[in-house]
Image (cartoon, rainbow, N blue to C red; front, side, top):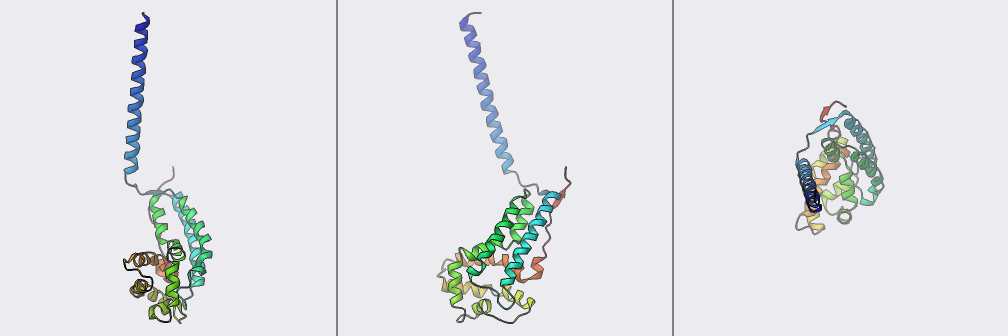
Length: 213
């Protein structure tokens, strides 16, 4: 066989190999992209549920620590009083990251008060300090920051019903004309419901379970 013929065969084989690699790569990328766009099937194993229960216990400890700061007589304190809770939040969130099941992880994120703690002590802290300074001038701020005698049920009802007035105070005292802080306050404050309201604390970590393999 002539040298030129051998060279031609080698080149043809090399081209075929390159084309195969390119096609294979394209198919792999396409399949990976297709899989990433597929919806979460929602199936969670008992192992996921067990980890979630451990995370929920850690969140209970966090809630108890927050509740110790917020007795029924005082609904909310200044942001710096909640900063020590950041460590407990970190532990809770680290635990949640171990859960690969997105359905359960989403539930944990929804019920955890860490979203409120982080917001109140970070992004909202400057506005919170302004509101605190006005607590004796704006009635609903006094209801939150000043001491009042309440039963647990009354504290729960007050916390849930006071949002409209607080949002108005945020608008006026924190120059929130666009309503960004008001919207976030309404969203984040709901995560603190379990501190004051027993019925919000009783949330079942429900999901479809698949048997462990």
